Image (cartoon, rainbow, N blue to C red; front, side):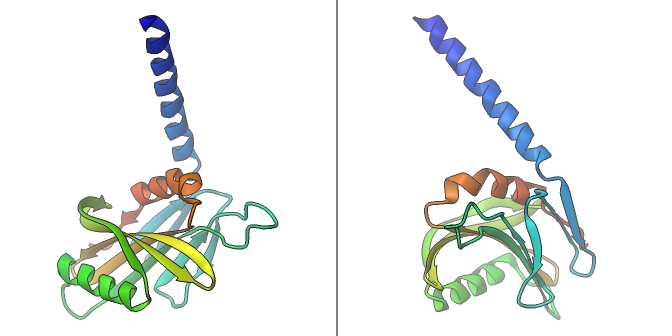
Length: 177
């Protein structure tokens, strides 16, 4: 009885390892924003788009069919200041901004990294434009710059997109020194 369980577990581990390797290979595209000092790696089927300003870029997942009107996306926002910004100050400002938009805090953690930098991770729920959304944000600072990387899912779509979102966040590079 133990042998089939061990074989099943070994097969599952091989499948998970192959899936992780496949996801890493799916990040075949590279976008570098030299002025803001970062690199995003993303799947070829994602579309790169400009955000609301020069400091924001979006990387949108493909539509999942005719009825899919919301495209999950990774956005990168960079803000420059005339002084160094401590991570705690950036975190507090981001929380105030999200709460002002009506977002509800789901979860947060300070024990994460973004491009080898100490970062703060926070997850929000938000109704925006008639969509129930989940926003998973990573915020970090490098001297006078604040980097906010956000993956936005339609509520219920997190599981379908989480692996790619995590791979994109893991591959995110801050080149600003």
